[in-house]
Amino acid sequence: MDLTTLFIIALTIVGLITALVQVLKTTLNLTKRYIPIVSLAVGILFGVLLQPLTVYSIYTMAVAGFIGGLAASGAFDLVKVTKGVDQK
Image 1 (cartoon, rainbow, N blue to C red):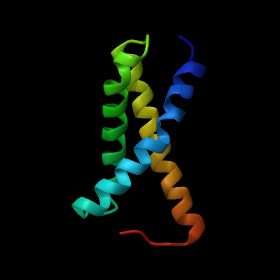
Image 2: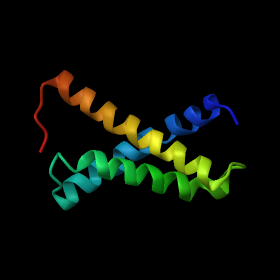
Image 3: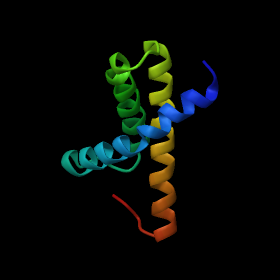
């Protein structure tokens, strides 16, 4: 398996991770310092849960979820900085 496939898997779940983290943030009233940790955990969880639907190992999907969680957290922070909004 090459890194291109790993990044493609990660990028396909970034939207799901971002949406679920936003729901968790508003539902559980999380402070902004916990959002990256929650994003990583949700990414790994998505990777592991989606593993039976793929031909890749659970380790590969967990790493793809980790990368997806990092990307989702970074994308959310980028939008926040661009808009100039201080999120809770």
